[in-house]
Image (cartoon, rainbow over all chains, first blue to last red; front, side, top):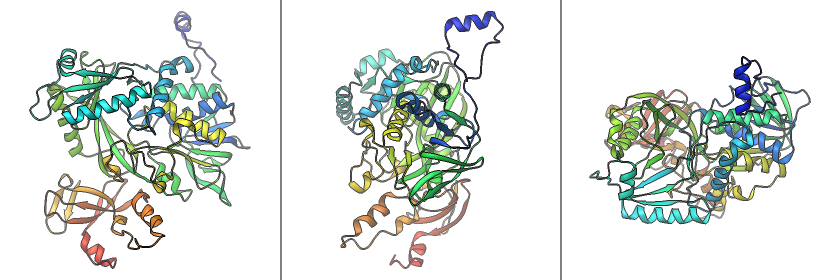
Length: 420
Length: 96
């Protein structure tokens, strides 16, 4: 088990002694024959964070995290790394603000460099109506202590001279910024949580695919996997992107469709953008990685799919969004593009809830906002798995909210998942 | 993706608007009954979300404005069959 404390002193010591003292970051495990108190299905950011907070906050350490591939091989490795808590609705904003606060202390908490960079996020405003809507959103953020800054066009232009302020169709009128937003090294989030959980005694089991659930009399007793049956006191499914396929094995249908979201990175460029900028009239968000590549994305492709690749019309749409606010991006060459599968829910908001099967819990429906939610998702899911009660800030994320009419629809487009 | 329109031949999927599963054709008709709330909940919000061959509704907005039922594999994007939605709907026993 790795208990190595990372520090500048440790780096210096290893540098002088031939780097012979480093140990594996976390412990690779095989399933225990007598089972676990909690089995978490899905070794992504959310699953590993859940295991970490279960062990740290609730003292439950007899836990297995099952991952069908390698940890962090799903959406935590395929996103645009943006963190923010600039939501409007009461069901969402306190949750994402908790997540932001956890991000702010993540590296000290985990003793792991996740490169949390609070470089700020700036949402551009292109019309008077949008200005009103964003002022309302800003006020909602202030109520939740998330903080915000309203920036007039003159200052936007001074700070970011490459923006096309006078675009004939979408002129930039102002911007709403959240200075605490930013980016995080996404893979390091999975590795950091894995290390933290592993140090507290959690078994991380890779190449272990769940093929079914052992359910008797409406109660889940464990999971079936390619490494044999694993007994569990409680099972927490946490596999956004594959939620439909996994929950179908328990006979549960969800208010979720699976869609593909594409993301892009350009060749490395000199520093041009020191924050995250989003287009307000279309869907385009961009930041510059520490290697210099512009990392950007836009809308989902819009049709049901489980294939981790998209089609060209959306590539064109995303790039034209980029061209509308920063024409200079047209000179950059695209280095890579990739796709990830999103759990698109019916109102654009996620689920952290129990299910109709006793001792079987569900976390999913993150649409394309799951990365920023990683710490709070793990924190609140751990709270639910340990206490059987929803955490206060995640209490709106119930699976039955559509039946009750208690939807959390930030965008106001209704039960049309490809529009959220 | 190229959708082979039954009347117009092969067309780029960019010309179409996607709605979702063909289950959306079967809107509950028992709206006057008390029990219909549950039926409408299932119809509106719950999805099969199939991994494999998926029957889905595409609207040819930038073409002849017909609704099509496309059978497409959601794991490979391979399109296996394209029909006019009105034919599928009639075959289901609905009026149009």
